[in-house]
Amino acid sequence: MSNRSTVIYRKNPSGMSPLISVREYGTHRISTQIRNRALTSFGVVMVERGTGRLRVDGGHEQAITAPVIFWLWPGMIHSYGPDPGGEWDEQWALFEGHLADEILRTALITPRNYLLQALRFGGDAATVWSALRRNAG
Image 1 (cartoon, rainbow, N blue to C red):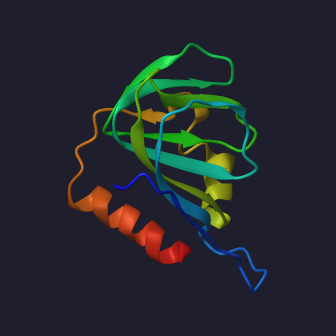
Image 2: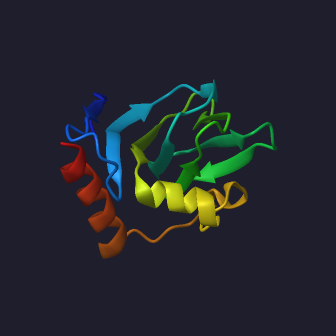
């Protein structure tokens, strides 16, 4: 991955709420912390390389070691990034739609279970992120 960031923005021209709509997708290498941010939609971040820290809703910092995925909820205050002096490579997506609404309504995935550590990136994970890139572009 280069040091350049890639971000793809997508608008829903029909105005209808689809099952899932990827609003933004990006890949980048970061060397600084993102601090005290809240999103207006769901977010998912996949850290592919590196180590760092994650804190959500004022909780305790958690160590992050790639590969890892974490989920961010609308309105959830979060801070994350690589360890001081380090950097990590990540892919991220912001999404909305009926599926995201159902996640909130049914608590299918909860804000307490936002971190998926020690992932095995194989066919399934690669397929999901490839689909995110295609649907955002």
